[in-house]
Image 1 (cartoon, rainbow, N blue to C red):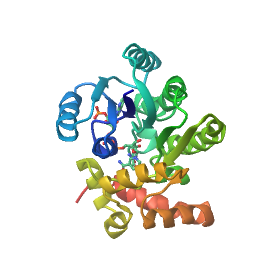
Image 2 (cartoon, rainbow, N blue to C red; image 1 turned 180 degrees about the vertical axis):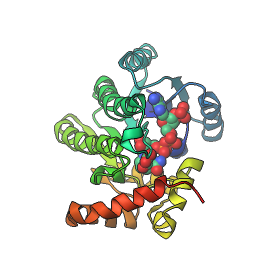
Image 3 (cartoon, protein in one colour; image 1 turned 30 degrees about the vertical axis):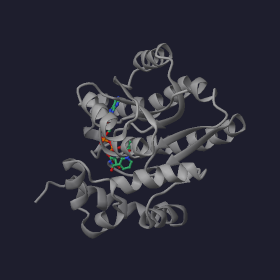
Length: 264
Ligand SMILES: NC(=O)C1=CN([C@@H]2O[C@H](COP(=O)(O)OP(=O)(O)OC[C@H]3O[C@@H](n4cnc5c(N)ncnc54)[C@H](OP(=O)(O)O)[C@@H]3O)[C@@H](O)[C@H]2O)C=CC1
Ligand SMILES: N[C@@H](C=O)C(=O)O
């Protein structure tokens, strides 16, 4: 039987890094992301370099019909899926009063609704195995409110709570649920520009993409529930638990205002 790992948001960033790492370990993959982002080329590169099976499906996971169509395709193709990685997610920094309502809706649809619905619909595939895995990608943003990001951290707090609840519910059925909380990942020009504005702090919080992918996948294999890559992010988690929000709030406001200020 050919077992597959299904990864959403696999065309770029962390999703792509995890796809490559899993293929190196010999896993067959199903890659999902938005149309027209060279997913076919990536699939072919991975097939050739890692000698594994790679299928791909291009869709916008912001709508329920698209998610249902994806799952219909998975069933029709008779894939045996033992590992689901819910990685696709969007965010960004902007004053809430200027935010486009469509953008707000897409963040919630993709990060929250899409993750919950896809997980529910893929679960029957996972339950066919005596041991299977779900890895949800949250963010360090899950642990604190963030002004000028507002909806994004709230969506990632959902992923954190959803993952822990689901883990408690599904462990008896042989499905292990983990959640990873990356800090900032400067792999796109937009993210690099934002991080540069935080100078040394931004650099300290940054863990290379491949390292995050390796840590996340390794910790899943060890049965870890909450995965926080990098000691600076672990310290950030500790701060979010023990330093009152009233103390952290002015710092957050100033950091995020700096991030939004025009580049010099
Ligand atoms: N970037 C960062 O600093 C951090 C990111 N995260 C989280 O990590 C995850 C990966 O982030 P990152 O690697 O930066 O992401 P990228 O923006 O680099 O890539 C996002 C991936 O998701 C796909 N995607 C975006 N929108 C949709 C959609 N509507 N339907 C289907 N696929 C979609 C993209 O597809 P396509 O290429 O086709 O557009 C792409 O493959 C996300 O959940 C993010 O919230 C957490 C902490 C920090
Ligand atoms: N992708 C998110 C990273 O934290 C963001 O847009 O802020």
